[in-house]
Length: 288
Image 1: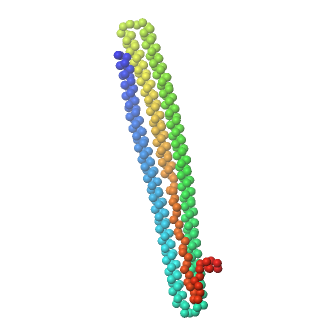
Image 2 (image 1 turned 180 degrees about the vertical axis):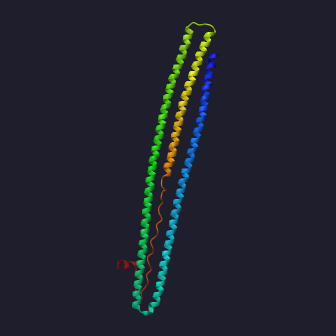
């Protein structure tokens, strides 16, 4: 009865120490996880803000292009109307002069059309070049982020493997140490019994051997638990660091561009008909 009580007291002391250590560790891990979650939320908010800003800028550019095209079309239409009115007033001055003026006006319309068309083509080329550059930037930053994430995960995995190896080695050493403690306890008890002592003194000596054994086993168990807890903390910290680094890598990825809005080419001009002449076609001016 005395042997068991002494061993239980030592085990209770060791368990109490482990409980305090576990509570402190849990609080530390909880704080680290909360900080990592906050950092991830901030990184996601930054990504969403950048995406919204890029989308708003593209919409503004599209509206400006539409307004510019509308103004150009109205301007061309006004010019055509004015020219037509002027030519109608000059019809009475002579058919030859009128037809010459018609030809010159149509040529002017063609020149204006070609100029407007070339301007739109230039704008399209600029937009496509900028979009291609944005896509290349996105692809490069995305690949860089993916490579960084792979490296982060590999580093965390190495920590996991190393800490698991430490735990396995600590368990193996603890098992050997516990066997040695039991063997030593049995040897000490055998020596006491072999000495041939009698009376209450032998009980005290055996009780002391049992107490020392219980204390040694509890101490070894506490040491093993401490090493295991340290490895778990190291693995958790490695995981938190990897997730935080991954969030930072993804937040550095440029905004993924969408298909750009391209301004439309202007409509071909409506030519003026001369007196006694057919209405010219755009192809006839192009051949000329």
